[in-house]
Amino acid sequence: MSLFSKAENTSAYLKMGFMGKPGSGKTVTASLVTIGLVQMMRQRGLAAGSRPVYFLDTEGGSDWVAPRFAEAGIPLFTAKTKAFSYLLIAIPEAETNASLLLVDSLTHFWVELCDAYMKAKTDRFGKPRTKLQFEDWAYLKAQWRLFTDAYVNSNLHCIVAGRAGYEYDYVVDDETGKKNLEKTDIKMKAESDMGYEPSMLVLMEREIDMATRTNRHVATVLKDRAGLIDGKEFVNPTFTSFLPHIERLNWG
Image (tube, rainbow, N blue to C red; front, side, top):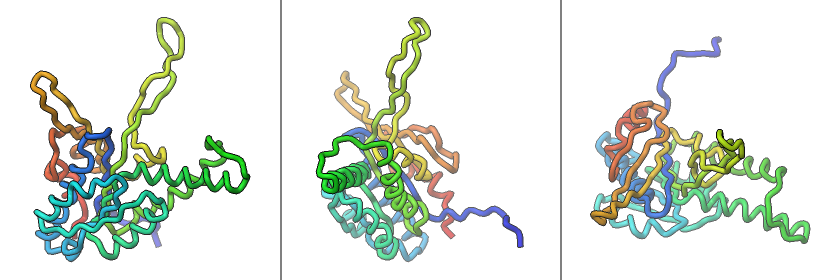
């Protein structure tokens, strides 16, 4: 029996991530993609399209996008919590009962996991702990992997949104030879490897034109495993902006 078999696309579920600063359009854009995806499922006669959307909400964003789902005739069920334990429960429950799971903001679940761990250490040793030590990260990463493994491997469309933060590194100045701390990259504020998990990762930014006093939301595709829209920018993006990647899913 051979270890290998003929290659085929077995990725049948959208695993998408949005990240950005406040007001960048993460929640609205994620909702537009969710609505479009459910409508596509209905058009293709897939049973999952008749199920509600589950929204795991840490910031109250579901209150403001609920009218969009109502207008589209898509039931929206919410759970407002920041508890990491509920994040783990949400995936199998949504896999059974929902058409898609939307998580916003993922950052809060990572923060709650770290805070709860620090409190447990304080309670155990009777001494306030204000900073995570090197040995703490192994435990926290293992706990977070319970979520990412379920996120990647579940038979569930899942869209996550999180806050964006900068990565810094020391860069040597060619003229002075001194090391300066500079911004080197941008990532989602969650466990450091979270950016590897989605099959499509999008950075949302708000651009303001002071001359005309107008603003627009810009989506930059940082990662597209299909390679179809990788690096593309979309102004005021909608579901169709990301359709080339979505159509590559194994809908059969």
